[in-house]
Length: 233
Image (cartoon, rainbow, N blue to C red; front, top):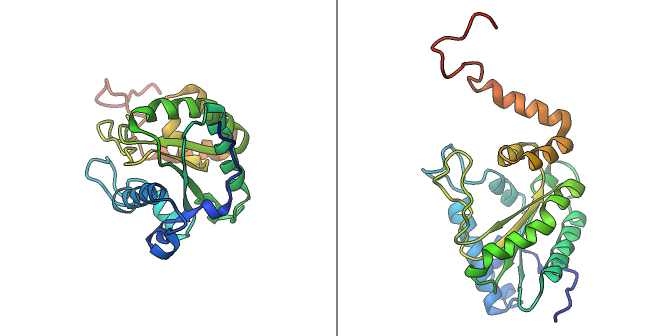
């Protein structure tokens, strides 16, 4: 049984660093291929618009800003013979690394993120793996420390907010994303009462203002069963 080790900043790679063959010799061949596959997917898909997204702008508006600031890092990990408790311990180490890494405050800190790439995780295991890991970590980490975590893999069933027929979480190599919570996350939580309650506790007044701003753009006062609004309101 392997013993989890505390991750260090030497395991974190910016996308542009993976293009440097002289530096990439520090990685095992399987690790390098996995990181480069995810980096290519981010650069060619995630940061670009898509006709099926249901809105304008890149697939993830967060990522281009993170890349511009050199605040999105990739890290290789292997599942191997690790059990669930060991994997959770490894990811908690990345959470501690994330928390201590610069920047720790200000606007730039909002765009800090770590992508932990599981370079030896077979696709047929990915759904169950992420389900187990996130059941242990996702909500406690969000409630206590404001981490948002999500699993990405080739057959991920997750859909876009504005188009349920579009699946933007289908990465070529399985990975787990961790980033800071932001007020706009309510869009991901709206259909889950427990998560929405956690979001409301975290953001309080700023959350109420964000929802109000969104509602002002929508015809929410109009009842769908009436041609004109009722007079007795």
